[in-house]
Amino acid sequence: MLSSTLAAIREPDSALAERVAQHLDNLTKPPGSLGRLERLAIELALSQDEALPRVSPPGVLVFAADHGVAAEGVSAFPQAVTAQMVANFAAGGAAINVFARQHGARLEVIDVGVAGELPAEVGRAVVTARVRSGTRNLAVEDAMTRDEAEAAIAVGIQAAERAVAAGCRCLIVGEMGIANTTASSALLAALCDASLEAVVGPGTGIDAARLAHKREVIARALDGRRVDADDPLGALAALGGLEIAAMVGAYLGGAARRVPLLVDGLIATVAALVACRLCPALRPYLIFGHRSREPGHEIALADLDARPLLDLELRLGEGSGAALAFPLLESACRLLAEMATFDQAGIGAAP
Ligand SMILES: Cc1cc2ncn([C@H]3O[C@H](COP(=O)(O)O)[C@@H](O)[C@H]3O)c2cc1C
Ligand SMILES: O=C(O)c1cccnc1
Image 1 (tube, helix red, strand yellow):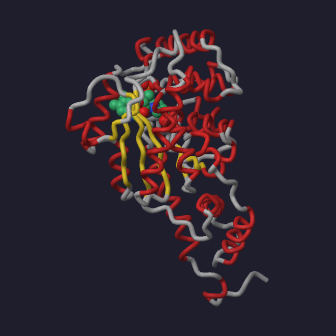
Image 2 (cartoon, rainbow, N blue to C red):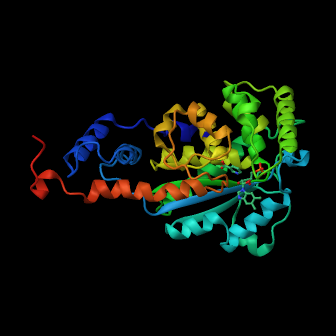
Image 3 (cartoon, rainbow, N blue to C red):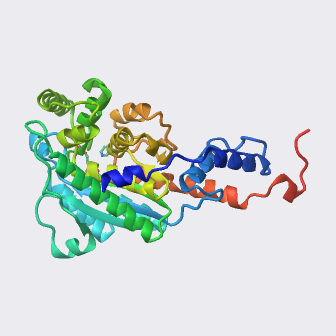
């Protein structure tokens, strides 16, 4: 499934970019005056291969899984909070539920590897696609086998395919998994050869002593796991998480079906980085919603040459920052479709 998805991702059409840029210049405004919104309009057109792209309704995919490394005491919250938050998503009470409702989004929560049983009513409200009940502790052994990582990627591809089949025109990809800032920071440090001082941050809000401990745990993981930066799938298996792998799949599956992909904070951006290493042709389909407070995010963004749309000092995850940026995508589409040209409005061009 992974190889056929990778093969289906197309480079965008540069002639279309030219046509859309020309249309933008014909609209009743000084050329370039809508700034980054104009570039965004072109990116959306290229993703969809449509001169008049449409991003509504969006689909929100929230992948949830647990992490063996939580046992090292690297999060401010216990592992059980992952399952409790899945119940909260199912009941509609989390931040991402609020923004999904606001945007009329189709929201799907996918249990790709939560540890422990979910109550039956929660199980009915989520997609159950557990590859295993949480990863192994990456500080002492590989978090996943390669097969498990590929199986989790396949869960993400299938979720993206369901969303597109249900009519979603844009995907907002989010995650929930206690200790996943540890996994994503380890993966980022390994893939970008970045220092742990620069990469590792407080996640849910740990104090300085625990932050030092988190760095030490990640240093141990990097020493112990033999990670080859030129082997993104191997790195993902050794240091990643099931929900991170599923996000990789969701990006790839969405791009294969030509929908723009809104990327969230640190964890989501590290998944995007892994996906781009697997398939560089993915990059034009990615739109970066926001800049997270988590310090590693800056490093991941720089590696991807990405400039996020918003900086609201968020540090939540769940896809929240991506969802908050969605209205800008809607505005970019509407200006292409609805603004009058100079000819239509009878306004003379600049002298
Ligand atoms: C109540 C609650 C809701 C959340 N929603 C997202 N996260 C975020 O925090 C976690 C990562 O931080 P760390 O690595 O420090 O555990 C992830 O689950 C992420 O999605 C949450 C965390 C909590 C506690
Ligand atoms: O950047 C994020 O998405 C993030 C930061 C802290 C905790 N959870 C997620």
